[in-house]
Image (cartoon, rainbow, N blue to C red; front, side, top):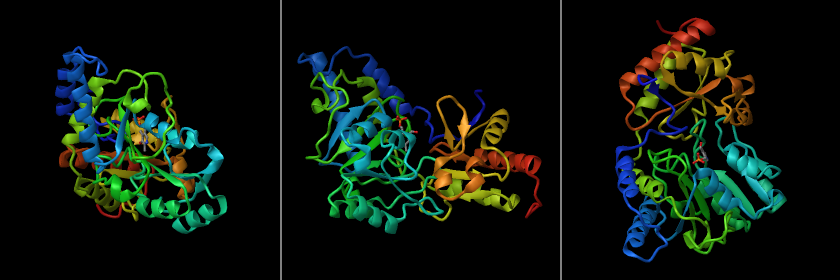
Length: 365
Ligand code: PLP
């Protein structure tokens, strides 16, 4: 539906013009980046320039950048070789980390979705993990984790630290060096780059076990001819990212709260991504809300949609103690081109839906 208002940037951002142009340019080139001739060297240059751009955006000047087939693969590469029972992860990790580390110790979060540091310290001492996995920003609520503090504590206990930076990268200033983690996953399509491209940022000296072996590409850490056009598109998108303002997100939340007293904003008390709002409509299944809003011309998503499109109650919201609210929240995620008009239209549509499906006295007319 061409006229749909797109408010699902955390699922995937529209391709940025700069990425489209960079990819078109790369598609016009013939070389394999591993070839020594001029065409190969030109392709190689695109990849190496992109490596610098991603490192700069991630505040990772000294680190290695390994290009992958997306954020999921970057997470898997960082975690490869670790047995789940020698790891700790937060209760709100993305499914790709959660599944890969199934059986790991789980660090609880508070009602705002941030890691309980006291419990984390207790688990560190009790389980003496080899690796700790914690995301920088949650994909459903936007809650930002105290990653630098977690890394400091984990390193003090001799554990390695992996951070899923997929939703934070390009949306808030991310400083790999200051976070102090060993590895961090990032992805192109959350910031206007193409889908199916990502990278693992790895501290120099962090030993990685490749998922795909064979060729020597990507410093022997990811065999296979690089996706040159995708990588060029990723870098072009990264070069034009800028931290977002929370103004429109805040405007939306204020409007919903003022017009419908039952509205729940999950993780509202946590430091959050400026573009993400996780909104509960009590008593109404998330899937019903998403479908009704879709028919009304708005693209939003339920907290946890699987690839089948089915919606289950959100594991993240359940971990925050949301109870039945875990199945009644939608995620509204904004991007740099989202307009005030779009937000106001959405707020009107959401409130009308709430008054129809879950009538409550209006707090303000
Ligand atoms: N990690 C987080 C926090 C995400 O939100 C996503 C995508 O939704 C991923 C990892 C996976 O990234 P990709 O889609 O590039 O595989």
